[in-house]
Amino acid sequence: QVQLVESGGGLVQPGGSLRLSCAASGIKFSIYTMAWYRQAPGNERELVASVNEENNTSIVDPVKGRFTISRDNAKNSIYLHMNILRPEDTGVYYCKAKTPRGYIPVEYWGRGTQVTVSS
Image (cartoon, rainbow, N blue to C red; front, side, top):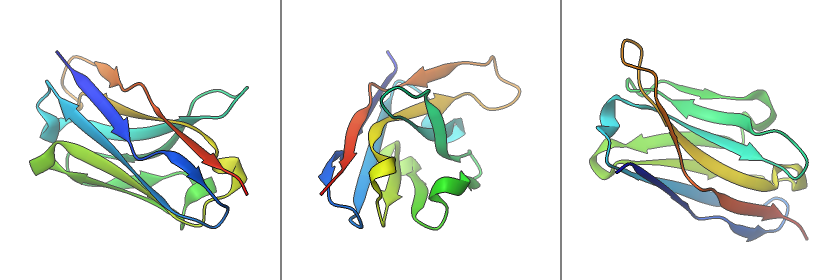
């Protein structure tokens, strides 16, 4: 059974920092492309950052320079380091695992962790 479990969300003041974690089980973690998405109230879910099996990372422009993504294959985990948080970063943050190219396309999602940026 595949499970992705996010943690680390919470309430933080503008300008603060958080580190989100996503622990995966039931998959051969090292070959998966992993990503963080977020969904603000009333908005669609959007990509924030991704890291592939070769540890190449991609960050979307709205958070570039403030957020970084990393993975630890030994712990079957990815992380989202969020700095200089803004109110517009508020939302539910989801972890996604996607099979790499050449495999049957499959995606797995976690249940999300709430991040609220407010004074």
